[in-house]
Length: 196
Image 1 (cartoon, rainbow, N blue to C red):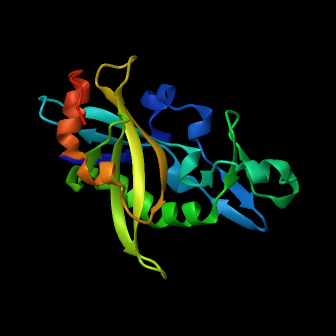
Image 2: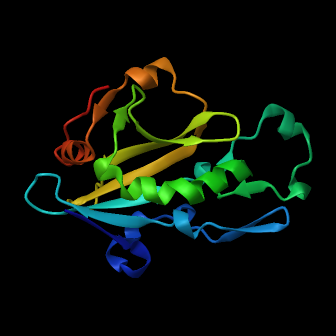
């Protein structure tokens, strides 16, 4: 059984949340973006160890921004209202990533127990949602890593590293080994590696 709750009201896990994991409203050009759907939350889950683990879900700014390209580095972009600085890196706000994160991201994370999760050779994991766009059928891909918390024994940290549209999966992603979420969490808790 898994249950979810919002971490904002639970002080026992505030030590796992850094300032760049808390999102406020930001301005993109002349529009205000509400990023509250990307604030941390937690999942209670017994993956087969005999007691609930607390899985703290954290989101990266890569879910609504992209890297600066070399060409954009040469253009004065500060005045265009599309720059995002989380204190660790400078990125470009991406309207498509933001809109797709609002439509898909919280639901995907809340459904991880029932979703296919692919083990990537890079050591992280992938799940995706297929959707129809004006051009074709595309995949909203969510890349994340999972680590055992070094401070609290029964806590796991799941960090969504990035989420964006893929036209299609590459051959490594298509052939990637699949793992159930409960198996993944149990392996991480027991410090057993999941091999790609």
